Image (cartoon, rainbow, N blue to C red; front, side, top):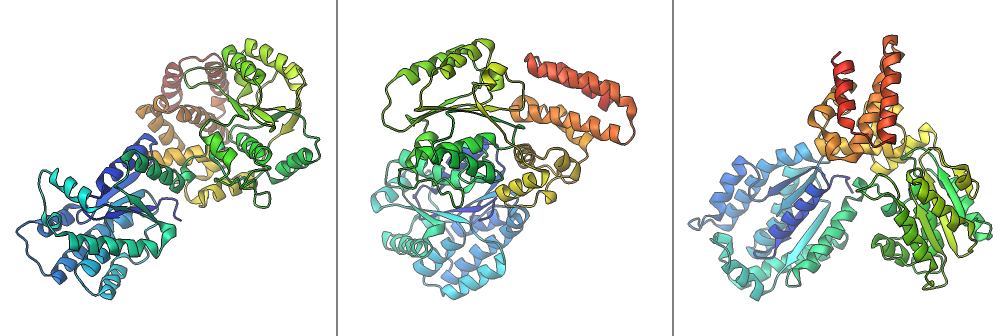
Length: 514
């Protein structure tokens, strides 16, 4: 499936297509994912003119004219679809299957003619997934009554709508993998949750949250070493993973956690392909934040550090009786963000032996207290440059050399860092293959993207470091002193949670415009 799919919404009148498209649009807006919406007939200026003609209550076309008008409107939309195909998610309110359902099953037009013209118009454009909304007679006419005005297609009798809906169902049942039938007679909230879950899966590539990554890339050898230790009952219950941010430490941890917790469950971990089965019970419970055998400790969104109260609550939870015989696993991410009180409280827990409680600690290559480090089995998580490129290419199913400049790739080679660049590119529809580094930095500063997204804040610091490295490497040695000045300032800004605004303004004034 394309990483930027065409998602179509089909169904007869009053089946709820428009509501669900609006729902998904809001979801994609919230996630800052680029998409376009098209409706048929309609979508652009000329198509909308044809739409008015088709739906006008005074129009009285024969079935062949009706078909050709719909296809004419589609022909006008093809240019819009081609422009965005595989570049943005495309949401379409009615498409090719509507033409077959209405014009063939409803009106009796030769299906071969419809397929032939569609093939001529679309060529290699393919729909990736279709939601089919069904509705009963009662709800159909009840919803039509609520509309402010009715068009020509809102005024057919039930026998026509039945033929069309049954036509849709035949199409859906012939290709069940790429169709989802939504019974719009059911509770709307139930359907909303179902649709959003499907959308999440369709665009899962855009989400690299470690807890959601069902496939492990790049750390095969280390993972097999870990599960071998576990199998032979030699895996320590206190483990520290250290490595560059974005290298895959958390993803590795979640895979190890699932391997342990799903061991005797249905849909257990697939060690052959290094895949978590999304139907696995433990995985689902972790996604829902309700797994009794798993505790996550990480810095809260509204705080800069892991505070003492989080550790105290952890102690309370660990002192409670276990619900089952499975081990309990505590994952502490970003341990470098533990404050001194939190560290001291954590050390007391780690000192207390308990074979049924396992700790996985994650550190982003920052200094860790020796007292904490000495209590754990330490693993250095790393990837070669080639492994990082291979990993991100597999995740995106695309060659990043077609998406990013060599400077950006060569200097930010961890999968997480590259992914953030790609995500930033997608969100703001940028050409990072051609844009110059200075232009990119200025764009981020001028638009103040770093204020809107914490990922961009990290990104701008990385880009500043890259700017100095590249300019000094070509002989601009005058930047060496000012590089030291700004890198120290960046370090202090991060360390002491200082306001980044003055730092970035100073960099823009003294370096970019100086």
